[in-house]
Length: 75
Image (spheres, rainbow, N blue to C red):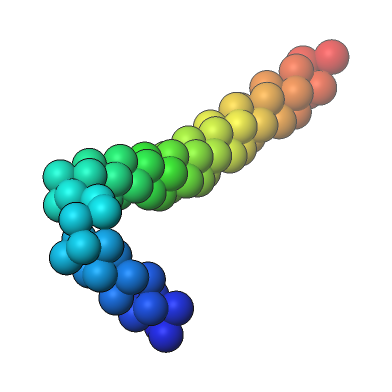
């Protein structure tokens, strides 16, 4: 938290000294925010797809076991 405070003070000082503009900071924060949102979204999407894949393979496995048992009774 202290590090973020120091970074914030440095950025405010750079804006007041006209080293960087607010437009540059806005653009950088937009890019970083979109990147973080994309990474979090991809993370959750990965786990949702993984859970559906596990559910699907479980259902297919149950159907296969039922088919094998019924086939064994036919022989």
